[in-house]
Amino acid sequence: MLKTFVQVAAGLACLAVAATPSTAKAIAIAPASIPERVAQAQVIVVGKVGKVEDKNVSTTAFPGATDKVEYQVVGFKVEDALLGAKDAKEIRVGFIPPQANPGGPLIRPGRRPSVVLTTDQEGCLFLTKHHAEDFYVPMMYFDVIDKKSNTFEKDVEETKRCCKLLADPDASLKAKDTEDRFLTAAMLIVRYRTNRTGATKTEDVPAEQSKQILKALADADWTPPGQPGGPVARGFQMTPQAVFFRLGLTDKDGWKQPQDFTKLPEEAKKWLKENAETYKIQRFVAETKEKKD
Image (cartoon, rainbow, N blue to C red; front, side, top):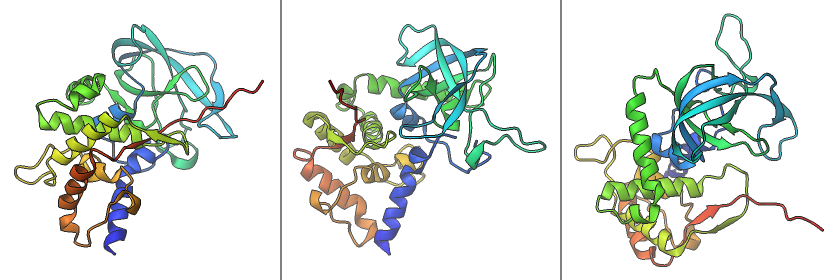
């Protein structure tokens, strides 16, 4: 029973990341924390929606798909490139328009949460390059933070902090501040251990970086968020325990799940310290087709 509970908890920790792109009204998917969004984005920009392109783009939504969907594409005027899109004045952003639902909310096939971008809308976008087309897409509804949001300024500031940490992750993993080290390690684990391409191939993270990530995780405050003296609350998905589960450790790695769940933090930190020098974190990599002569 305990093992089942832990497996379910670990699965819930990854739910917001593994779910398909989406409208919050259709499926109750809690927004991922800002660090999670930063970890998974290829481009993060602050700016304003410009012109909507005259023609939609018909293409597949993900690698391996056979059915095509219609993407509406807009020009997004970049005012501040926080990640990627260096020196870009404007980038193309695509989204799948929701269907009209008279008298009700906007929906799209499969009742998946969706994004709608309108001319002159301002905000911060967390984007991923479309797998086949020359535009970027927000993968989830919460990957667009509207400037009218009450938390916009706060969210952008946190985004900038996270981007700064990931700009030089090796240095950030050795920062004086324990929270900075953990936050960097957590974002790297989320980035490395989230498979959004369906790839079956993995590769070793460089040994020194892997070691520093495990050490930062071991040194983190494992006190449950919300308790007096506990760490900064960033949702369940970014607690040291949830991040630890993302490593996907098994018996072959020398990890034994304690029967007493209350001892999990102690045992996890012990494993991290004992294996930091030898264990290498595995990251998912997109497989490329080799060209034939």
